[in-house]
Length: 127
Image 1: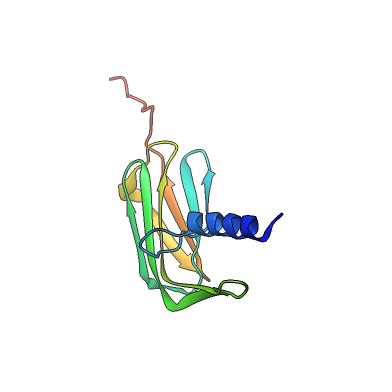
Image 2 (image 1 turned 90 degrees about the horizontal axis):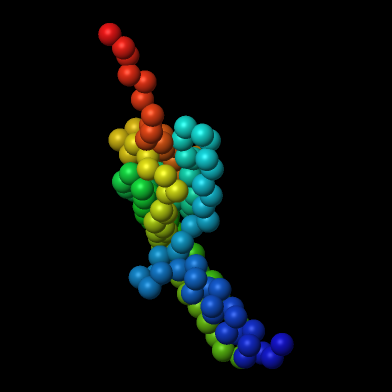
């Protein structure tokens, strides 16, 4: 592979992990537990006070400011440097959830959000 091809590939990967406003997209995972979804986000260098979670019935948006900026540098034919001070990610959920009952915890840089699913079937008592 030629050097220029490697540089293009690296930039394509890096561009996909940050947004135009300079916020980094955190790694995340969605787990379906049957009655709820559990979303896990990797948010290193973030305090609980600096995290904002917004939910609707079909999306979750996470924004977080880092305690200190993270800088990536690459030295070679061309010097490149980029720094980030915040995370931001919006996730579309596979099913509708009850956003009012969502719970979130942050421990050791791991944000976990539990979102109960909306009930599709309700038992109706017969009088």
